[in-house]
Length: 273
Ligand SMILES: C[S@@+](CC[C@H](N)C(=O)[O-])C[C@H]1O[C@@H](n2cnc3c(N)ncnc32)[C@H](O)[C@@H]1O
Image (spheres, rainbow, N blue to C red):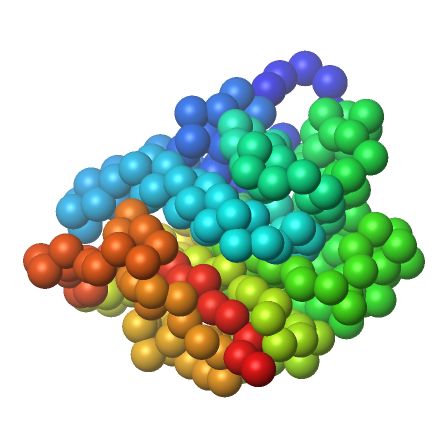
C-alpha cells in the first residue's frame, strides 16, 4: 500500500492488522509494517518458529472452525478483531457450507474498517462495525449489530488472534468473561492466542519491544494455563486447546504434539445446556 493516506491512518506507525496482512502475503501494508514484521520473522527464526507460517496456520484454523460450525447449523458469526479482508473470510467460508448466513465484522482499526466496508458494501448478509474488544458490552448492544444478528438464535463469537493485544491479564480475562455472559446454551466461542511455550525472557522482551512500537502497544505471551482458563464453564470441542495447526475438529492430536514450542494455541468451545 502506498500513496494516499486515509483519515485516521498513520503509515509510519506499524499496525498489527497490516503486519498480519504482510505475514499472510497480502499487499495492504506500509514500509513501517513490513519492517516490524520482518523483525518478528527474524526473531521467530531464532526461536524455531516461522511467523508467516503461524499466521497462515491461524487463518486456516479460523476457516476450519467456521466450516465446522456452519456444517453443524450455526448461521450467525460475530467476528471481533476481524482483520483486513483476505482470502476465505468468515462469510465466504460459512456461505460455502450453509445458506442464511449472517456475519458482523468488528475491528477498531480504521484501515480494516475502510477496506472491509469498501469490499463488502454489496453483501447485505455482512456488516462491518467499529468497535473495541475492551468494550464488549458496547459491541453486543450496538444498534447495527443487534439489527443484523439475532442473539436469541445460535451464534459463534470469534476472538481469533486478538486477545494477546490486550497486555493486562485481568483485562483480557474480563473481556472473555463478559463475552461468555452474553452467550446462551448452544452458542460457540472460537479463540486463538499467541502462546509463550518455552520462550526465553530475552526473546519475549525482544518481541515486546517490536510490538510496543505498534498500534497495539504491546503483545502478551500467555501460557497454556492462562489461555485454558478462558474456556472455564464451556465445553471444548475435540481436540481441545491445541497448537493452532493441529486443531482439526474431532481429529486426535498427533502423539508428538509439542506444547512447549512458542506459537499460537486455539480452540472452539460450546456453551453447555
Ligand atoms: C492479527 S489480526 C487477526 C485477524 C483475524 N481475527 C484472524 O485471526 O485472521 C488482529 C486484529 O485485531 C484487531 N484489534 C487489535 N486490538 C483491537 C481492539 N482493542 N479492538 C478491536 N480490534 C482490535 C486488529 O486491528 C487486527 O485487525
